[in-house]
Length: 465
Image (cartoon, rainbow, N blue to C red; front, top):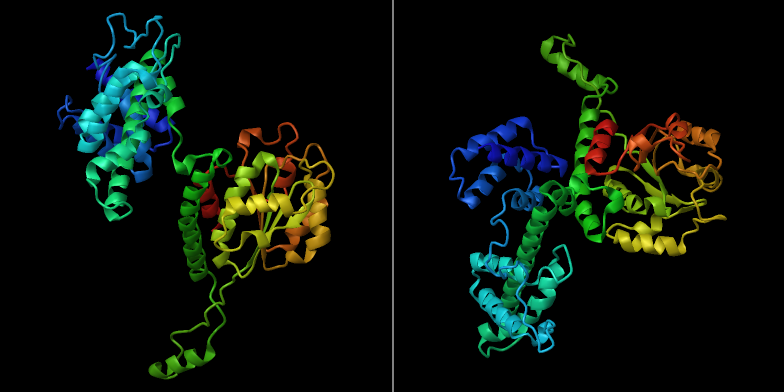
């Protein structure tokens, strides 16, 4: 029981460290759920935990990865596919060296087994096969760790596609619906096998180096806590889908704020008309609705290498919010400033637009290193008319100016002309004012918010609204 308690507390702690919001009450709910299932039924145990601690579908992959580490399906080899001395089975040639996998009859036999499993769709059998394959091919002689690449290189599951299609189509015409369905099915089964191999490799590494360390290395943070600076192209596509709900949330809050704002001017005609029902006494007064304010938006974005991933995302946000503003103008800078609105037309691929911007926009003055002071000065000289009393100014950058000038008086005049001004800084707050950071100097003029992930962006939107 003590071991189970330790497993539970360690698992819940790993979920929290990975970014899943698991409260103390939910951890206790999981314990109560465990009392209602057979603890020897691993599937039931997984379902009990998932029902009590997983709140969003996006968190399920992280949950499953950590569950497999903390509650593994097997301990040790778990496959009976190794010799008594613990070394992987290998076919040896006459010289005593391992036979190349392409010529190894044992590998060919394993590939035939894998082909049959793909055809049958036997998931438990595929799981057991993956366990055996990792025991045989997951660690080459002389290596201390385990790798998925050795297994996938030896068995090459993706090269079985042609044989799989031949087996199920039975001479049917190629290129039709039957082939497309079969190809999709087998592609999913191959991906499932690769996933099982990766899971088994993680389990073995966890046994060798410790579950906690493996969990930290194996699990990426959930999307809402993913640092913008580490986002890849696929992450940006997922982030793009998440931005639009945030934009709609901002829009609803702005409408609510207007609804609860000060009343408009007195509607004298409606008030007099309503007073006729009460003998000319104006018991009810009516007011004209306030004209909603739809401001313009100006985005001033640091496009230097240090914040390039952050710039990708914030430009996504900018154009997700374009319907809330009568005009959106975007500007980028490194040590000079140029307007980049034309590169980010609605529906454009932001990654491609950033590439085009880097090639065509005039962002470099002398060194090509961040110089906030000169960039602000260039913006004020060239685009002074972009900021009006209707303008909301949004500055995006880490406030690191390589110890150059800051142009604080010019920035102050820009803020004074704007209706609102905000600064999103992708650096952790603890790093502000370290080295060449001028966060406090700029923060005294423009409210500055730490914004490194979707969670912090949502908090900024709450503050903005």
